[in-house]
Image (cartoon, rainbow, N blue to C red):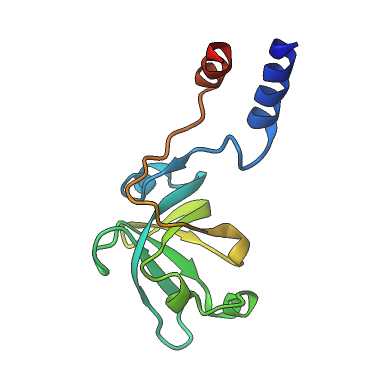
Length: 141
């Protein structure tokens, strides 16, 4: 019976979007240009200049950020908050296709559904889920 439950849980975790998706750090985003990924990191500032796209910096520094979240000015209406204010200095995960602008990786976001704000819990290492580890956990119980 326990093996059937474990198999069902493993199936759900593997085939459910979001649950089994692993994330990468902002410093590694440049390795995934052209791929759809989830990047998690702390935002460090923003740049908003009239009708130009809003840039939310992720990683160290502002101009030297490791990657950017880009929100085109026409898409700001899709957000119930001001992204440049609400997202600054927060731990976020952003999902989308990585592109590159002026040698820096970026993800263009059109709606808030692509950005998740994480709670501050200190330094947390995010690792992909291991089904082997999950099975070992239940076998020990």
